[in-house]
Image (cartoon, rainbow, N blue to C red; front, side, top):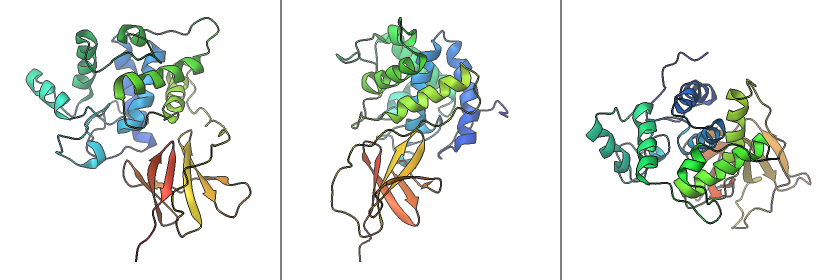
Length: 257
């Protein structure tokens, strides 16, 4: 059960810690008048960007003001840090970070509509499902709108953010404490760089869990619960490091020498 104190610092949060922070962030955003579907879309992105940790630096590289910082990883970090200092906000707190998003909304900053997602920031923040649109579809649509219109990372094909958004919606809107992970869809063929010299070629992330592609197995994807994350882009499975290569894939790093 959450002690209702935000967990903040330069480290990745585990599932229990993220749940703690989510219990604080969800009602705080509701108090700003944002719809539950919009909040879910934002939190699905925050989970990937920062593990819902307002005090985290990109890549855990503390003090690197050219990198990202905070819940949505403002880049460069000074975009938020200078703004927060000028207004007396604790840079590690969530309150100033939510107020920064409010300021961006009021001043037409950071969020820019695209042809694929033509919603204004106001329409995004107050979005409710259209006729026939399911809650799940709305959450995933808004998660994708936020990555395209607000976050704009180099790799914008990240459907896991939508899965995360839908999970947070179920927890806080539908009051489902532990929604099931989705069944993984048939994965596309992974990129074909040089294959590593070990049994495992790729990890594939879906629904917040990892699946393993094994060279000799005719049913290549099997669930793994033993993947350890060591940084934003690096995970370890069976002693082998895997690096994110986009599209939810992690490629085994070849051992040299």
